[in-house]
Length: 190
Ligand SMILES: Nc1ncnc2c1ncn2[C@@H]1O[C@H](COP(=O)(O)OP(=O)(O)OP(=O)(O)O)[C@@H](O)[C@H]1O
Ligand SMILES: [Mg+2]
Image (cartoon, rainbow, N blue to C red):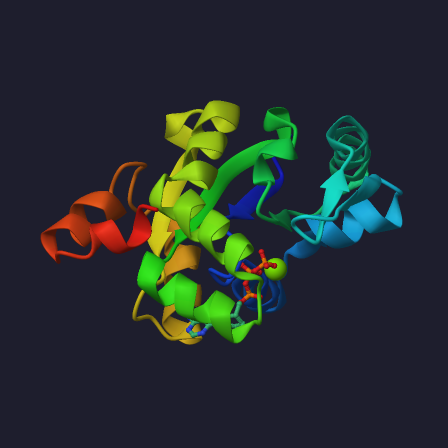
C-alpha cells in the first residue's frame, strides 16, 4: 500500500518546519529521516569535511520498509535524501525549492562553513534533490513547490495542495534561467 508522502529538498529549504506542521494539522505520522537513521543505527560515520552524517542507505531502506509496512496510518517522510524511501510505498514526493540567494542567506545565518554553503546552493541550482526524486519515484509522482517569498503558513498550504495532486510538475523551477535573467548567475559559478 502506498502510505508515504516524501518531502524532500536541499538542506535549509524548510522541510522539517513544514512537515511537522502538516503532520500535526493533517494527522500524518511523521518520520524524520535523520532521526530514524540515528535510532536504527543506519549512520555509518561522519564526513569530517562536510560535518554531516554518512548514511548507511541499504540499512535505512530496509528499516523504512519495515516501518511503512507495519504502519496503518499515512506517513510523511522528510529529509534531503528522500530517494531512500522504497518506491512501492510512495504515493507522492514533494520537492521544496528555494531561490538560491535566499537559501545562501539562510545557510549563512545557520553558521555553515562556506564550502558547505556553496555545495548546498549549487545542489539547489542543479535540481539535485528533484533529479533524485524523479529517478527514484518517476515523474508522475513528483511535484515541486517553490517556497521563495512564502511564509511558513502559506508554504504549508501549498504543500498540502501538492499532496492532493494540485501542484507544479518537475521542471517548473529553473534557477539557472532566473539567475541569468537577473544578471547574477556568475556569482554562483566558481
Ligand atoms: N517559509 C519560510 N520562511 C522563512 N523562514 C523559514 C521558512 N521555512 C523555514 N524557515 C526557516 O529556515 C530554517 C531552515 O528550516 P528547516 O530546518 O525546516 O529546513 P530543512 O529543510 O529541514 O533543513 P535540513 O535539511 O538541514 O534539516 C529554519 O530556521 C526555519 O525556521
Ligand atoms: Mg530538517
